[in-house]
Amino acid sequence: MLVNQIGESIKNRRKELGITQPHLAELASISINTLYKLERGKGNPSLNVLIKLSEVLGLELRLEIKKKF
Amino acid sequence: MLVNQIGESIKNRRKELGITQPHLAELASISINTLYKLERGKGNPSLNVLIKLSEVLGLELRLEIKKKF
DNA sequence: ACAAAAATCACATTAAAATATGATTTTGGG
DNA sequence: CCCAAAATCATATTTTAATGTGATTTTTGT
Image 1 (cartoon, rainbow over the protein chains, first blue to last red):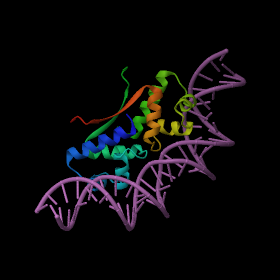
Image 2 (image 1 turned 45 degrees about the vertical axis):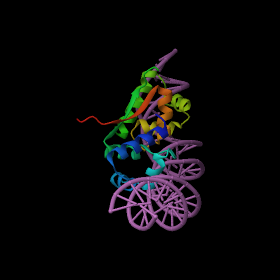
Image 3 (image 1 turned 180 degrees about the vertical axis):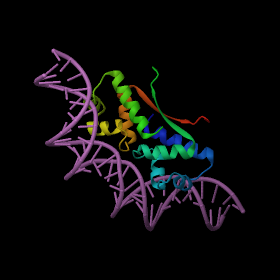
Image 4 (image 1 turned 90 degrees about the horizontal axis):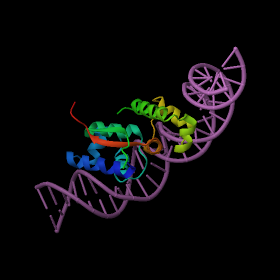
């Protein structure tokens, strides 16, 4: 999973839940700037940021063995 | 998934493949110090570091909707 | 048992993420 | 159409991840 794909997933999930960037940022205790960059595929977020967002959004981060093709 | 769980997964996968920290660090183009900390659950690795390691280790990072319980 | 490599750890430095702020553009509801 | 909120973006500052180095401990192969 690439950086911009993660950003897309976060954004889509946020939209599904009908929350704004400012609201999500506050719920996850991160700055709106960090969230904005992440959603746009800019930057290189830390694992903690991803984990915090996952918790708020009801997502889970998994590291699995890649299926061949 | 928590930070130390990710570290464990990386370490376990590395052992499975029979690679050393110095070797994996070189293959993934990260410092052994960063890898060491990650495996020990210390620190807060960036997404790029996780992606690089995933590629070398044949893992994939996924962000899924959490199953209830 | 020995030696060499690997792993663990501390510490200092560098690079970059995270934040804060303010400005501009876009969007959505009334 | 308005206008207020949201989103986008740039820039500066603060915080911290990533690195480099060296030392110590642990593991592993012979």
